[in-house]
Image (cartoon, rainbow, N blue to C red; front, side, top):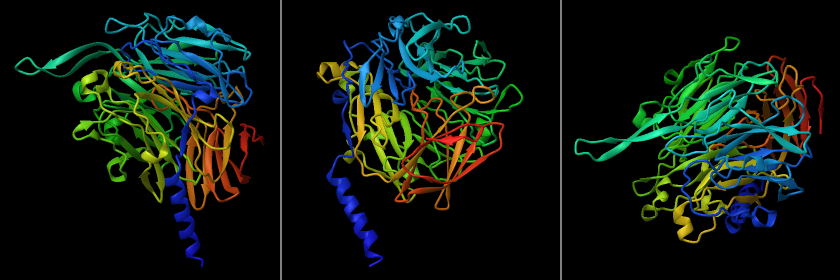
Length: 539
């Protein structure tokens, strides 16, 4: 009897999962009805940002529209309403917005955000520098032009973090292609890319009042066509390091970079080669998560062709993507697939991180070579990734880019919202081009949520640089606050953990930079715990 019950339960679960679609696409029914007009060329961009603009506890959404309108969607009890104009964001008309990242940059208790825009390059762009949108008491946004600090470029993505641990969030911005040339063979045939790239920029936050551009000082002014970055504590030494992905690496010979933060010294050390991160590829997006539950962050790196799943051991990387079946090198025969946002989250709350990958083949920019490069979804079971894409309902074939994880409807499970860019072939086929909201309908286990709150003095309000470790069933799972992830996107601040059939968490360790580790035991499931640097914990 004891042995039969688990097998029966497993068979029942397998039957249930195979008989129903795991995620339902519900964009229209929840108000996300905006359809991109026209069929203009747009290859990158399409970033999404989670932000609670009015502190009502419902996570709102900012949709980067590229050459089209960008939208602020206010979440009203699980329904999204277009409030772009009401919050004064029509001031951004004319910006070519590729992505957006939120942070309470001045620690006033209201979340602001910065737009990452295509200013110039390749004869295109809006000719502007990025802009900061200051949140005025949750009622409207005021535009602050950042041209005083950084010049127009081709800003593609970035990440917030408190690099110098002064209590205010800093911002790293990747800067993409300035001009593009071609590499020719001896017969004059084009065989590769020869880009000229802008230097990346680092804005160090001075007391929430102004910024100092410090990329050269901190030795992170890389000019490798940066397309994604993550400020994350790779080596677990209490400060935030920088992972940078460069596009066209196999042609420029400038690979990805792991810059180790040498805090309290004001610079980063490039340790890419010695740590196994210096891969020359078409770097697209970064997803963070403790996949193997060993107490440090692992990373999923997307590409045109082979993706990489880096298991991390104290700052040393080992790629296990092919072994675990998540490299996604080919989409059809010898045609390489294109992946953008690779995000870890626990879809069924069983305690293991699952993986969603937004995809959109760049070859579809030319209609006669278009292929369906569908999104992928993997459930992790017993340290293996199981491809559930076809059953998941997530395997949409449009050209997806930025994606975020959020419980938009407050039903206690994690949903996916994914952006789609406008491509000519889809317009010709009369295929709808719009944002996709995938509601999670999986049967889920118990869970707890953690929301870390800085004091605005020693610890920035968003708690970038803060982290937790969940201790459960002999394992330990590391999580940190998301300052930017996927492709030009950023998910919410709540850190989620699945308990399966357990109703309490054995222990939670909380790490606020510079403070003694805090421990909390026997936390009950079904609650989002808010924890402050003074040790206060509540719902």
